[in-house]
Image 1 (cartoon, rainbow, N blue to C red):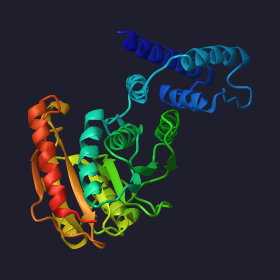
Image 2: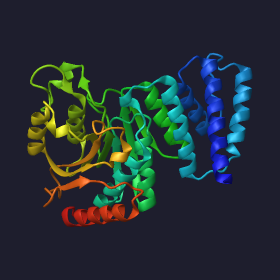
Image 3: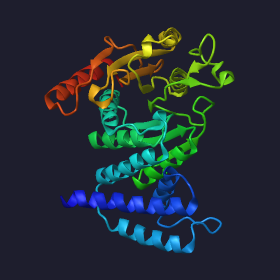
Length: 339
C-alpha cells in the first residue's frame, strides 16, 4: 500500500509541475510534461526569455525537490509517468494514431525479440522505433528485454510530431535510457544507420505526399498510398542484412485494397516470419484488432522459417496458456534463427 501511495504522490507532483508550466508557458499539457521530465533529468528548471517567471521557477523547484525524495523502482516510475501521459492524451485530445501503445504490447514484443536474438546469439542490439510517439512502446520493450537477458541496447526514435519526439526523449532520460530522437517524416530519408531491430506501432491511414511515396514499391497504383505500408518498406530498407522488423499493424492488413502491392514487395524483399494476432482484450472492437508482423531482411544468415508462426496470442492474465505461447515462440526461434 505504501508503494501505491508513493506512486500516486509521484503522479500528483508530476501533474502539479506540468500544470504549472502549462499555465506559465501557454503550451499544451504534452509539451509541459515533456519539459517537466527534461527539467527533472537535468536537475534544474529551464528558463528562456524570462519564462517561466521567477515565482513559477521557485514553485517548480519545490515540487522537483519533493519528487526527488520519492524512492521508486524503474518500473514504478515508468508506471507513474505513463499515467501522466494518459492525462496529456485526454487534455490535448490527441488523435488515435498518436495515442500511447499499451505496456502489454511492449511486453509481448520483447518476449518474441528475446527468443530471436538469443537464438541468433546477438546481445548488442542497435534498434529503432520509426514512429516513436510517446516513447512508451520502445521504453517498455527495452526495459522488458533487459529484465529477460543481458542485452546492450542502443536506441533511436523518429516521429513527425515535435511535441511527441520531445516527450519520448525526456521520458527516456528520466528512465536513464540513452535515446537518439529525430523529429522528421519517417518516410523521408533517415540519418540513422547500422540497425539490427525495428519495432513500431504503425499509424494507419493515407500518406499525403505522393512525390515521397513514388520511390516505394508498396505505393498505390493511383491516389494516396497507405502510410503504414510505406513505413514498413522504408524501415526494412534501412535495416542491416538479416535485420528484424516487428510491426504492430491492423489484423486485416493483408485484406485491404492495397494489400497486393504489399504482398508482392514482401515476397521479393523480406522473409515473413510471423503473423500473430494480439490478445483481443487489448482492443475495444474486432475492427480495432491488431497483430504483430515479424519480418526479416534478406542477407547474412537470414532464411525463411520452416513454418511461419501464426495464431492468436493468449491474454497475459491466462498464465498457463501464455506460458504455452512462450514455449512455442522459443521452439520456433531455436529452430529458425541461427547465429
